[in-house]
Length: 346
Image 1 (cartoon, helix red, strand yellow):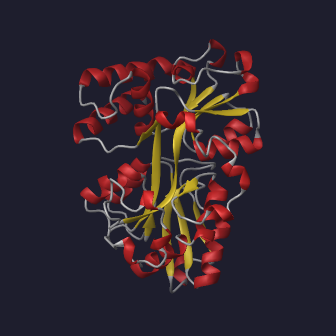
Image 2 (cartoon, rainbow, N blue to C red):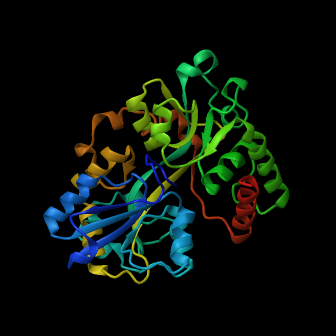
C-alpha cells in the first residue's frame, strides 16, 4: 500500500558504505520514504551490520520484481494480502517469527494474522487505513461529506485538482465501497460498475501517483489526495487545514509486514534485523517517522504525542464500524481488478 514522499519511485539509499565492501550487509527493499535513515544508522552502530535500502511504490511492483527473478534482497515489506499471495507463490522463506528474540513484544492482535497463521513467514511493521485528504481552506464551504462521493463525484471547483493513488487494489476497493459492491466480487458486471465509477472520475484527476503525496498536498499542487493515513498525518503537520476522511461507506484497514524473500543471501542478517525491529524503542522511531501505528507492545511510550492525538492515526471510536480489514481475493477477482486498472490507465 505506498505511502510516501519521494522524487522517484526507484532510488537507493546506502547506509554505511557500499554493499560490496561490507562483510555483513542486509539488503532491504521497502516502500518509498517508509524507513527512517537514522534508524538504519542506529542498527548499524549497534550491530555492526550495514543496511542497503532500495524502494518501490506498490505491492504489485514488489511482486512483479520477485516473480521476474530478482535476487539479492534479504528483507522486503509487503502488505497483508500480498504476504498471502507471496506465500502461495513460494516466494518467501519460512523462519517462524516466534523463535526470534523480541517476538514476545508483538501485540496479541498481530500474533496470528489471517494472511500468515502463526507468523511462520512475517513480523508486523506499520498498520493503518486508506482514505483521502482534502484542504479545507480550498473547498466550497470549507467541508466535504464524509463519503467516497466527495472523492469520486467531487464539486466542479476541484476539477483537475485531485490525485489518486497509483494502486489498483486501493482504487478498486474504494470504488467498491462507494458502489456497495463486495471487494472480492467475481461478477464481471460488478467490475464494469467499478470501472464506470473510476472512468467518470478521470476528468477531475490531475494524476495517478502514490509517491510524493505529502509534498504535493503541502505545496498546494492538488486540493484532494487519495492517501494513506500516516501520509495524511505528515501532511497535516505541514498544512493544518488538511482533513483526513473516513468515508461512511467503508475504509480499508491494512497492515504491512517484514518478510524474507526466497534465496535471501543473508538470512541470519535478516533475522537479526527483524528481531531488532521488534524492540519497542526501535519500532517507535519508525512510527514517529512514518506517522503510522505499529504492532509492538510498549512502543507508545517512545512515540510522539502528536501521533496519538491525531484522528488520522488513531481512528475515533465512532468510526469503528467503517474500518474494513484488508482481504485476499480469489484469482478471478484479481484478474478482473487488473483488467479494470489496465483499461483505466490507457
